[in-house]
Length: 228
Image (cartoon, rainbow, N blue to C red):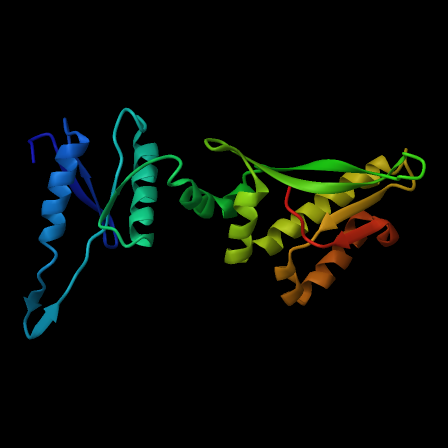
């Protein structure tokens, strides 16, 4: 290490190393050497301990310039390396996209990053609009607009689909109720994930939302889940 390089423990079993004037080839050589040093087990008193090592790498300025961004990117690369059982991984925006979505999905609702689009439902008989379907979207501050095809399966996997759906239902009921002052027969369709069928309390949440928003139940349609 050079005199200006930096090494520190940042918590738990995580450490950060800041190196100056190194390229990818140099980093590969250094990481291979570091990983090799963990191959052999070591002894502590009468115990034989086998340890492992995973490394996430990011470069400045091409990946970022501020400390918070670089630490987050290195952590994402580290998670990617752990998931795939590899010793190290270089940060790449697209390869680490899923990891970023998984980490930040629970915060998106708190940070008001979700919004709804409404797709008209048109009657084939008279070509009039009979209702609207609420479609959820997510605008991430760095990833941009994230398709439901990406984040809904993750929400279903980690159980966050319950909070997302109840938010959609409440927001949509409030909006469509306002529209119903001008279009009294307008119906609202909200798609449900099959994963919600195992949540018995969901029915009670639907009832509470309808009561809170004063949305007429006979104008609400809960259907099969659909991604667009």
